[in-house]
Image (cartoon, rainbow, N blue to C red; front, side):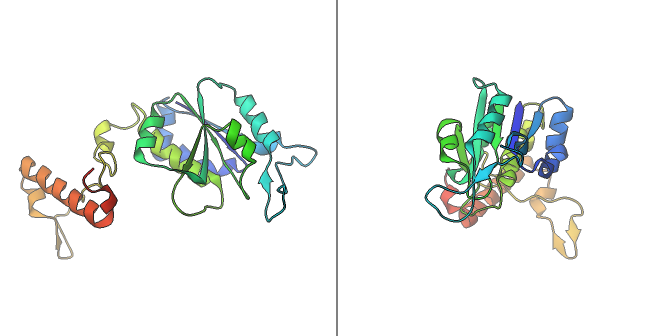
Length: 222
């Protein structure tokens, strides 16, 4: 997969060079490219934003630099352009799975009061929101969505490592324990030490269902 990210702050994407995203690049499963939007800015000061028509606070990111950067990336027929925004569709695991099957993703990272609506109307394919809150920049959201997608790419991690994750089958994951079996008076559930795999599977399913009903009742029964 190829991922292009249009950003005013490319230095913030260091986390995508470590852990699972870093391994994905090392294995040749991910081609990550960062594009500094300021290079496409207008005039001697490389302007990328301006005051909003109609008045109001803040600045709006201009069409010209973003579209020029998109045109430099090319690949219009194969790419999916994503704009993270609080106004977008709530991003879920099902979206990550679908995007992992795409050939090429392009992220536009917004700032200030957002980007000119014409970019969103005519050059953006998907808009996703991470939740009902506002971040100071689109870089954080782009990294989160990218990470959720990258770990699902074939050959990056073993499928059994993510198929039991929360949301993969609808509900939340079960509790996990490791050595030692006793820590400061707190014991690991006996069933996990029994070696009886059928009982362990049943226990895990029960705990996952209980957690889902308690924390995310909207997911219960899915």
